[in-house]
Image 1 (cartoon, rainbow, N blue to C red):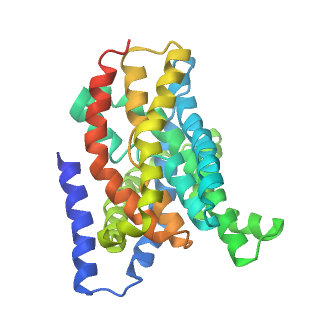
Image 2 (image 1 turned 180 degrees about the vertical axis):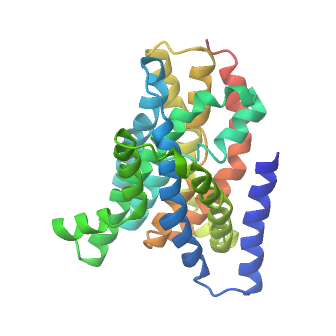
Length: 303
């Protein structure tokens, strides 16, 4: 319940301050900078080294990749019909391909399945974050570079390897093999704690519900895939792998979370249809409460 209240307060504070024009119109960019350049690398260093891989975790490990690939196919088909701009196409892809599996996913699992079952979702969440910090970052930077006309291999590599979330992910995957970095966990915990409130506050600053009419087609596509089609894909994967019980249920449940907040901020920061990016998160959070309830009852008969 605390997390749900926090979501409401942070988004509402952003909307209110935006309406009152207390902050500059581009104030959200400063908030995004903290989230992207400080909080996200801290999240990588704090949690990625703690992942314990095993054959039993095949479903939550593969699931995020299936969602990402499914999103690519979905966007290609949608773009073939609608002829999207490069910015809108990439914004739709990354917000479909990555879900909010921790800040929303964990409280929802706690509410529906109990706190003791959250451990089933940790691998799914961390693989999703690794996808964001690597393929998500690369996809957004590539599109931004193409739009600005600066795309060449050296420029692209420099941009990617100068981006802290990408570097934080690589560091978290490699460094713990040689030294123990857990001594920094208390500090990292404090930095990570700032991520979700500030990310939601930034969404609120950018959220203009009156503009839904301008983006309703793209929003409908993004929400359809993320809240309905993505969990269907993971459900099919779970059946193929014969992964039943709470591990299977929770993996499917996690797949149905709304769009990843920070990838939406990243796409917005690089000016890839920022109006859509803020709206798909705000609407996805609200609609996700209802679709998650439906998925919970559907999954009761699974396994």
